[in-house]
Image (tube, rainbow, N blue to C red; front, top):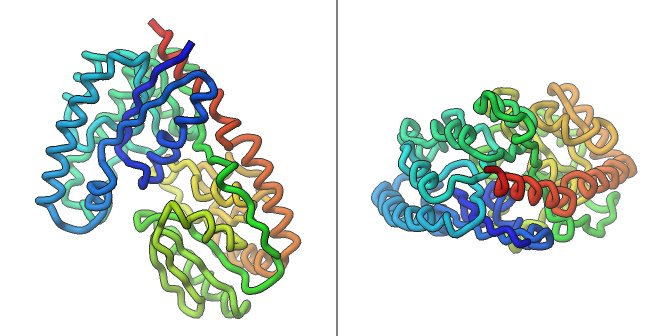
Length: 365
């Protein structure tokens, strides 16, 4: 029997979280009898403006027109078997969106892949921090028929928000990668300069910047080494840095030309809510990766077998020296990483679990 799902997400396809947690699931879920219709709050134009500085009049107009559209979609939720709410229903604080959803559809699955219950706001919108919707996360989790949490730490939070409810109503549904699209490139690992890769956005660039002194020292010992940054821009003393604007049409090709993926991360609660997308993308490409020994990274890989985890600058420097010098080790790590990705974090591996969770939520009285 076909299951009809209306999915609410803040982000259009250009937003990585919306892309990987909602938009990419339409076809994989259809193979399991689930018809998913995604309804992002921000369209592509408004999403681009949101992450730019200033233009408060334009941002205010976007909020007004898109709120009207969100009201219409919330009012239509009863025509579906279940709703999927990714992160939030509305970008600002307020109880009315959840009340409207409850009026029309009392069965929903809450999906979170970030610590959205903690106060956090981008630098471009710092003045609006007090108005953000993080306070709604607990109510969305508490009222949901089920919760899809991107990692175990988020799942533990969700269970605490649901006292007296069955623990198995909260399931870890990891972020997944389309392993048919993200495939290892055919490239000689020992030819030309070694290219390091970082994929991300300006909001997470600070983690990479913290590695800059180590990168500079390693570059001094390995002339010709390059750093390719996709989605942001960074300069490192003594290291050739190449910045690329993110583009869905070129992202995989650019990334596939590189040899070593970098996945730096901090150790606070916000970082514990991260779900390791950078690391997963590197694994899908068959890249050797070096990642901070923090957050979800230790759950995703087996250190030394399919990636290198580092806990300090000394460990990072030693890992990079060897990764740059040893093409065979890079290739072995990359092959193992790709195998792990296909078994545990590909769309084929995760789709049955997500489809099952949605069906259970739809059937819950």
